[in-house]
Image (cartoon, one colour):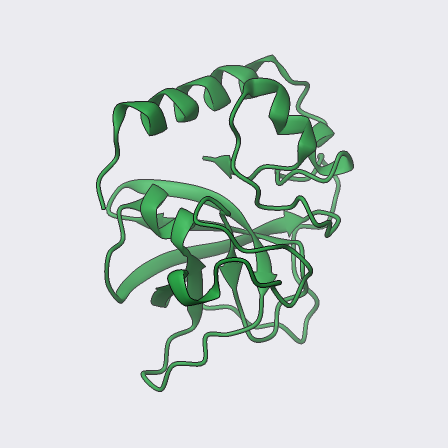
Length: 168
């Protein structure tokens, strides 16, 4: 998978729009994925242990059109991650080869037999330049309300308020 000019423009528009928003978690209150406001707990519940690195796979084509465990309809552009134990809406900052992306937990898994810790949606894998099973860096940075729109691709800066995941 490669990043094309249209994807680059969407990311640039997203960054520009984010710079105009107040840093008070405005996206999270509208169902979008963003870091929580100051003073908000950013840790998952103590029962959830997440290591700073992990093995990630990605999923998509066989699941497009189906509902995730958290209620989103999976499409090629949905940006999110599956995890076996983290609650729906947990925000995870994922890093791979110098690229980072803040994405919500949208599903359960991975269910592969290779010991993967994370299962990225096709949209998240594409944004990070991932085409195979890889080791990624992760950090839980907060949570947002789960909604059917969580993880939807951002097509216009105003669509941020509808619940897209943010690059970061």
